[in-house]
Length: 140
Image (cartoon, rainbow, N blue to C red; front, side, top):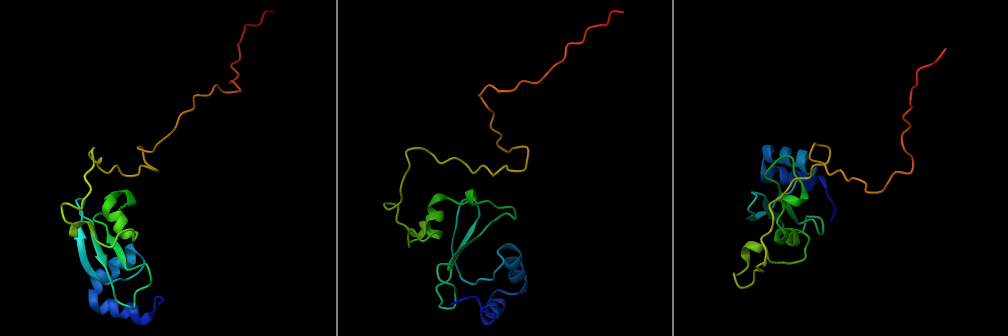
């Protein structure tokens, strides 16, 4: 089923005006669902299993910060959002969770457009060199 005016109005009544406008400003859509869990970064994950929701858009994340990046989601939650697994990571038994041999690094935000942007350098000798004139005094 597609996004309809009745679905949007129904979500407005369910979530209230404040959350409605926050979702419209952030996601561009309004959604209503149950809170499934919160990851260690403070992101909230929701799921809606009703028939009025668009297919494969029933799971979503509400980021903790206004400026967000996809890298701010833990890998297990990312798999749940992408429908790779049906059970959310916080509902798994300790025996079912995967333990890595190495710790996962903390999130480093994307630095594009800032001073932290990645700038590669070239190791290839340039084909053209800059001309630097040698100036000699004129003799008359």
